[in-house]
Length: 402
Image (cartoon, rainbow, N blue to C red):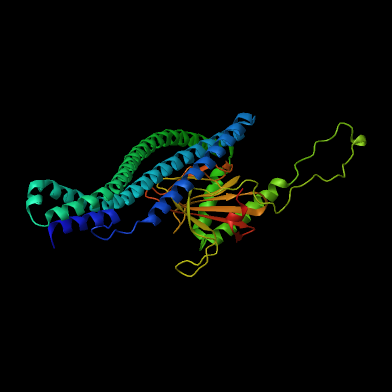
């Protein structure tokens, strides 16, 4: 093949956009996964911010000291979860930018190949003097042919180089987005560290106040530990704790001594019964104890074939774990095979179990609100499980989120 024909072939390949090698398939699934993670983190961030604002308003309106302190602690825990969601969002933004950059690099590599061939062809033409082309037989005809192909190719080349410049601008924008995501992550980490210090101090104060206010809290905690040692499994432990709680409630509902009226002859007994709440009403506010993806749903079969009595969530390392609903802590401590666990007794026979914690910030007998801090997830991350039971029977907690 003569040399001008080779040059014309290279120009045609550049015109048609034929890469020198096959292009690797773009990892669209990775980009979509990163975008989904970013959307989820931003939604968690908005939810935590809304909870924090609502609890802060409740704390400012509350006149009761204990309720004010619980609302303040729950608000601070929500702000901690908001900072954690901010870190997750920054990490997702960084992953998304890197995924888009890798995809763009593959596209740029495919576009650079034909342009490199074109540049080589043009350099070959410039190295060949016009006088030699005129003296060599047939070269003038080839030169005219090549010039015609070049005239028709130059507009396409300009268009393709313009698209290449646009993609390079996109690459620079993605680099700036990655730098901004790293900066946002550092800011969120600093905010998280500050809020966690405040929450640890506040949780310690609340735990101490609860122990001082409830004279029998130590005896109840010792009894809970004894029941934990005697119970053959978690179901039996919950049943015995619920039985003890029912007895405690019945004793608390017994009428106290009636004061002697000043005029016994004029005393009357009201026959109007006091309105009672529904005996089966679930907790008014119920939420997930930790932010994370649900890794196991209610009723799913595990590796052993046993059905899940609750749900499992993949928590971030040292993620903040909160009480799913208002109630009273009836167990807080380690339990074999479940890490540290917290059992919260709600009204009307409802009970929540939160397992898989690395540390606990509550004590037995302590009253908690929905969102009050319970403890932290494992430092390296892991599953935090939630079970909701009505009169001892497991139900799907996702049906009661509000």
